[in-house]
Image 1 (cartoon, helix red, strand yellow):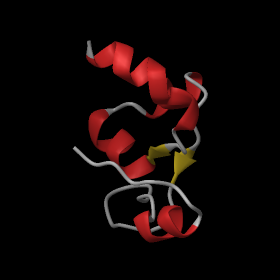
Image 2 (cartoon, helix red, strand yellow):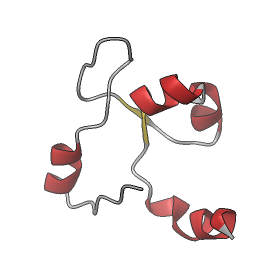
Image 3 (cartoon, helix red, strand yellow):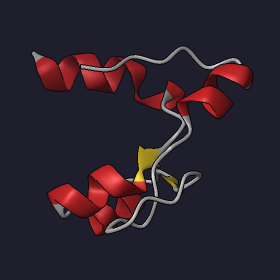
Length: 65
């Protein structure tokens, strides 16, 4: 079921937080799946995190879980 939900919304995903991809070892998989790695906010120990503020200002709805 979770995969079906992702498939239903994946064309609306802005990208993957580079920091999260770093932690979970998913950078290559994210890029190979066609997602942009987002690294707007520098965070020590990571390649950067997505800026939720910037995404919201750009009109995206932020879902976290």
